[in-house]
Image 1 (tube, one colour):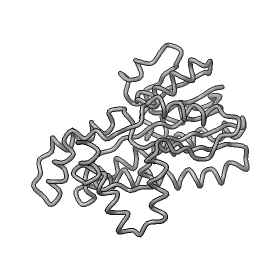
Image 2: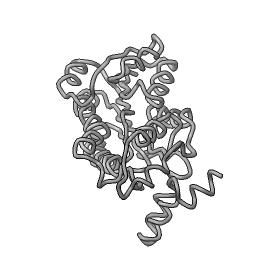
Image 3: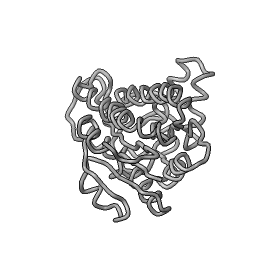
Length: 267
């Protein structure tokens, strides 16, 4: 199987690329992080590309046989919606949503010819919007809608589509975002909330667990349309469908740094 893995320099993408290559698949790992790609084994072919650059992506994939695209690209920054600049908001939309579309749209003609597959790694926040993750939540919610629309369009044309939605994962993702907040000055209305993110490292799922689920979605004869990884990723969206909005809001806030549930879980 010929597989393209995007975000291959990251924890999940790198793990997926390694696992698929070890199983004998031909893997092309793509990322803009050249150093991260250099850590992949020789069995993984790599290419340094900014996935937001449509021309570069189409040039890379031109005439290339592909059976599957696995999108693991992503990144986020912590900020209240009010404090998120237009540039920061646009950056997160482009990284988490536009970069996925650029790759998928370029690969679809080949995938359709070969009866291929698209596997996208999203996030629980696509279903559960978190305070101070507004731009990221918006991007991942958009990704959720994008994948649903894509599946309904291409499944009748022989292309499977699966979405993997983990909760927090131990990749250093959350810690890097928190460090950026800690380094920023601020005395505005959200300053105390930002300070609560000091040392932010939520209880998280092992990278290996998420990688295993992504590999399953990639290689199963008939993949599920959605894989929610971790108990939080499964039960929080369900609670959101049955609880009144204001009660659900309090529950979500309680799980963030400084909230009651956070303090109880991190004593």
